[in-house]
Amino acid sequence: MPVEIQTMLVATDFSEASAPAIAYAFYLARALSARLYIIHVVPEDDVRVLKAISAHLQSEMTPESLVEAFYAEADKRLTALVDSALAGDLVEERLIVTGQPATAIMSWAAAKQVQLIIVGTHGHSGITRFLMGSVAERVLREAPCAVLVVPSTAP
Image 1: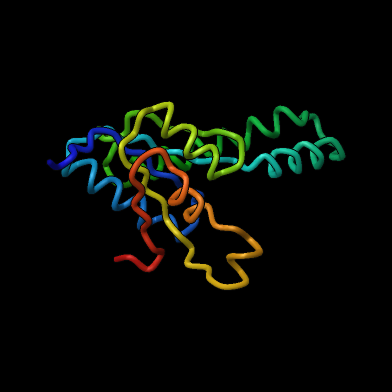
Image 2: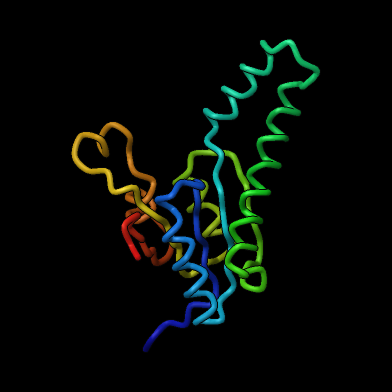
């Protein structure tokens, strides 16, 4: 008995490698009449670095206001992704969160009770993957639902 997919979550890091995953997510959401959540995870280390940098700047911007500006830019980029694909009717919610990317993706997938997570992969292998880790690989192994991994070379 086939499972009907009604909710999906797609993750983006705004890289070119994540673009095919976004395109597939929009296509599948439209084809399946599914609700789509789109998530961007700001790594905790990036937030710490932003705060440290802003603490040393001779500026009126506080560490918190710099982080807020960073989040506002991420929201603008998510909105542009959705608008450029004319996918506003497909996207249930745009999520911008701080955390470890794979953990945050899986946590939000569970919280939103999605049936499919769509992630892109940069295609690292061997020592590069070992040293850097792979968000897509971890999500694939540990996700609470089905996962579609879209390679960066997908058409």
